[in-house]
Image 1 (spheres, chains in turn cyan, blue, brown):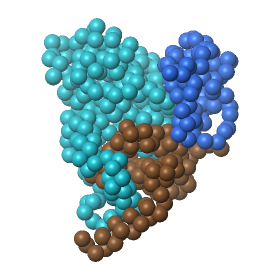
Image 2 (spheres, each protein chain N blue to C red; image 1 turned 90 degrees about the vertical axis):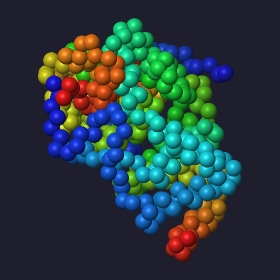
Image 3 (tube, rainbow over the protein chains, first blue to last red; image 1 turned 60 degrees about the vertical axis):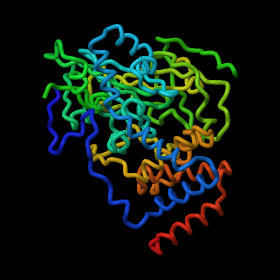
Length: 216
Length: 98
Length: 102
């Protein structure tokens, strides 16, 4: 079982939670912030989109959180037929739960006794945004992108996840059109739990594959 | 609707990633070039991102595979267990029979 | 040659667990990208190509969304959706507004 070795508040929850933000954007605009303002005003001026459409696009993004992925996992845990459909076609199964997937090709990879999956995008930051929201900074970092493919077990240890030698660690490098969601193993001791209660156990980090759900 | 290029490889087949070095936008990571793996599945056919990167259509769509490699075959000093694997999506034109 | 972005397998230090919630200007960058893609004015692979073309020191010095806004702008310039002159003028105008505190 993974242990919580974080010294700081764990960033592995499915619900929205405030995190530190970067320096106050009300301070002087940086060069790139200036570029963003300029580009936005030019594009709105050209009628390419409206301020309202931009605002709605942001709201749509904000509504996507790991809670979506957690619902998928919880449903798969309680419903074997759903799980089979999920593994066969992740996007279609997500849509069954009312989750908008656009053109996303979602490949769900199942953790099993003896197999642990880990997802990375070494080339950029491909991430299943439609079911997890925006990726965390560390997922996009040089250290994760470089090392997750080369020394996954060391990276997992940094997240408090230690896997025995008889477990295969399988890394998925998201290089093209597929997006990946890890289906974690259902923790023991959760028999008879409701889907809602199960979903609360499913953290964003467990759906990337750096941690495993615990009852803690 | 344009057709896709025909799929040349089948699941279970051994393939080698071409050790090519070409300019432009590529989605075949450097670390996997020249290595041999096994086709895990055909994902489908997709417009070639190397062409999309220049706002060209990237047609005909290219078969995209997931290829599985043993980590110990990729990294000379792999610190893990022999059964650890890595799976990567690779476009057909980067693959040749092993 | 190996691209600077093509970093799988290269040595690196510990994964910094730090996270920040994207601030508003960053979300706007993301939303602008989404709207432009919907209108077929930008493809994600054009964006990636432009990020990959950044000089290595710029790639390292810029934050994730700084790279994005830079690449979005490059793409739109390449496509002719905006001109260099329009962009420069508008950026100067924004800077002037900033300085005058309006």
